[in-house]
Amino acid sequence: MDDENTTTPCIAIELSPKISEEALSWFIDRVKSDRHNHGSRMDVSRKETNAGNKLLIITASDLRLRVGAEIFGLNKLHSDGNMRNFSVSEQNEFVNYKDDNFITDCESLYIIKTELDSLRAADEAHVPGHPDIRLYPGKSILRKLTSSKLIANVLCLHDASKLDKLGARWYKDMSVLLQPIDEIRNYFGDSIAIYFTFLAYYTKALIPLVALTLLFTLVSDEWEELFNYCVFAVVNVVWATVFLEMWKRKSVEVAYEFGSFQKREWEDPRSGYHGPIGLNPITGKQEPSYPAWKRRSRICFVTFPCVAMCVSSAVWIMFYYFEWDSDFARRYNNDPAVSSKIIRNLPSVAYSCIVLVANMFYRILAQKLTDQENHRLESSYQNHLILKLVLTLRNLFIVQIIVSQTLESVFPYWQYHRRLSSKRVEKESSGVLSQAEADLKRDVYSGTFDDYLEMWLQFGYVVLFSSVFPMAAVWAFLNNVVEMKSDAFKLCTSFRRPFCFPTTNIGTWQFALEFIAYLGVVTNCALLFQSPTLRKWFYDAYPEASALDLLLLFFVVEHTLLLVRALASSWIPNVPERIQMKMASVKYKAQQALKRKRAASLKPNELEEKLFEWQRASSEDS
Image 1 (cartoon, helix red, strand yellow):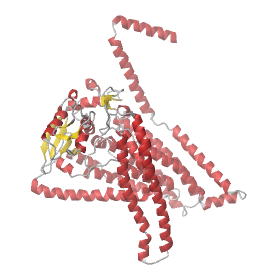
Image 2 (cartoon, one colour):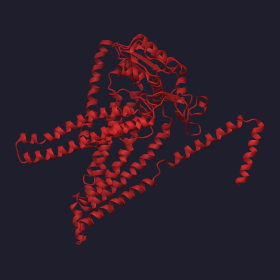
Image 3 (tube, helix red, strand yellow):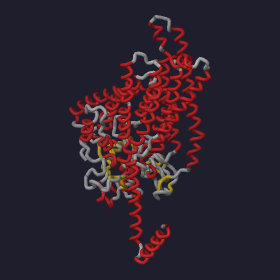
Image 4 (tube, one colour):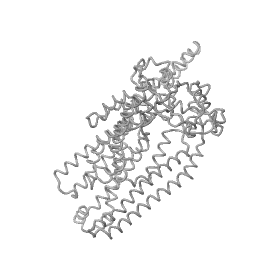
């Protein structure tokens, strides 16, 4: 491997100075050993950077990667046009199977990382050379060495030439809504590609709302007209429903093209999953086991009380802020002095700081609680973590958007130029930096949570309040245009290459968005019936009506819109017919292949008897 231009997908492990040579040799032997000896059969090379960092570079041959693709059930495009589980013995039946990049970079890194995570302690009582670091059967070796500070970093190395080509087609390209999704997926993996697919799809879906807003702005001078309220309330409900249902279909299409559709049941356990070693009843593989009742008990008696206490605290702080802000408004609003205006804003500043600090604390707590729940699948772990965070972060609307935009747009740009100047200085003194050394100086990518959170908060603004603030859709559209470029820029220039793993959809964020959409029905109806214009019209049209009659009308309209939303959701199928036909074709051909295999294994007289049985059964059925 060339230190300057990485062409082979590989994972670098930075070693801690305190790791013993005995422990290092033991770990390398486990990585190189085959599965019968509890190893992963990977290639390992020891290197040292210009800065003195000791590294292990983990790679795998093309044949080893293809075997891994079969072991982990990766889907590839078959010659019949369908996505099928790859098999080495039948690889000549897959499209482009002779290509060097048949196993993509992201799939290669996923296989290598998953194999490393699958290294489990067998009969070792402790890490060799470190008797104080105990091992238990089934414990992840890589995770234990990392938590014990014997391994400093584990990272996927960037490929400088491929990254430059991707950046030229991505954040440097002048097109606004077109994203090179296939190239993003091949380099960064499914989760990043699905996020940018969602971002582009959501931004395009905002165009009708933007057009309607601009049209009403040009032809109407007063947004508080009853007609405008009614139009935007209905449009919000219909738009949110159609968008979310169509996105479900789009995500299925994308997952099928990526080969991750309906793959969750075969997902391998995450590295943090621990328990006694047992056999998976579906795959027959050895893996840790953990009783479901223990996980449920932790959720009920530990997680739920902690989350409930945090949510209650967040609500109490919010109401206290409202009271504090009202008190300062009464005291200082009428005082023209500059100092009074500054003091007037102290509650808002203090609340913003409290929210940010509480957010940092709660994220750490949520992660620890989710770790203790010991979820087997990475997707399940992420969904439970997101659900905990969403419950309390709903109060961060304005603060979160302002802070995240600053950190995502301005800070990465400043870091990028600082890193460039640092590289120029080091090139003059010590030559060109190696890829591993350059990647170690990059920031760790924390995942797509903050990006999805920002989109969720923004979606809440558009759906909940755009009937009274219609420009929300316009600002959301402009923000997303900037977001696509800034997110692409920071991934290519500021962050380490994230680990890849198969992703089917946006996970729990779909539920969070649908919750906002349902809440939008109630909010828009409430805003509509709070309008003085509607109230005046109602009492003018029905002079004998009371406030109770207006309330009943509110419930009728609200439930009618909820019914319309439910009917629209049931009318639009989640899985496109094209994908249904492809999946049915794969299932049918698999059944036919199984029948042929069974028939081939029968002796001639047994086969003849079977044919007579099938013929008799067919005649009886007719």
